[in-house]
Length: 364
Image (cartoon, rainbow, N blue to C red; front, side, top):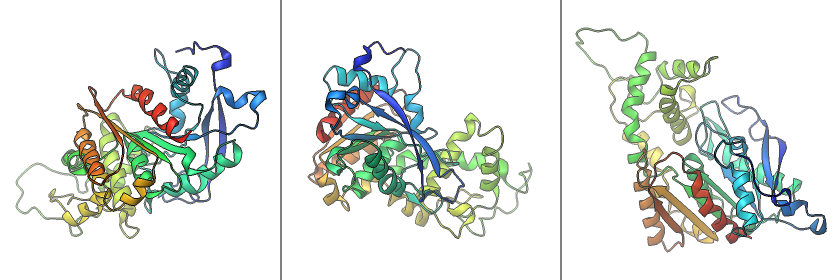
């Protein structure tokens, strides 16, 4: 949709290119040189204020996407730069720089944490991209004036970064971020295990089964995961029915990496019998935001603002997780803003109309 604001009120989207040392030779073979867009508000190029510095926001996108997608043209709707132009021109939020990093991976996405199976994406953001943006642009260069926000996997990344890196971020925004893994992820695994059967060797055959054996090494890939991933990396890429399987494998690579395991990560179920592996699941739960609050209470208290919201019809039932997250934050005495709305996990970019002004005012 065309931006109807006068030219003088419109910001500019530029492209920066960063060569990462941290992502060099990452385990998935993903590129270490990555261009990424950056939004500069109209005030940034005001010749009368050429020495003015600005707060900066980092947009962490959801699974299967990357930052550049948020600056693409959208028919009948605004992209994020259009939204920023409108909110800033209306005085609803102060002018901010917004960076759209590309953290896409061969497994389809990212949770923005360090993983030996995927790469050190938390370090990539906090130790490389943030300083790089500070060097290239007129930012305030302090955590007090810096925030990250995102939806789904990006919302998860934002709240976890607030817990782990308060010396980098002064505020965080979490839209429908993954939480309460027992509700969010666990129900997906039976379908994933069934989908992976297609790639088992020898192939399944109909008929009488005299003995059903557990895996010799439960939680390790017996080859079917590798064959599925090879299928996803083929010329045609993953089909629509493959995305949930790919996503759960990406989560396993994020939450239970093991350099000694096939593909660099373990699984929380026996691939043959579907038996639940509680010890492996404990590794996942250690990364669940609802369980992380108490441990990281001191860091969360350092933040200037925490914004969380979720639709109460979320397909992944994340609203139960965000409710628990808010409850645990409140119990720990951590100030935050929590909202719910009549919506699902999809089509909720309009919620940035609330979160971005809230975060921008906190770091201005």
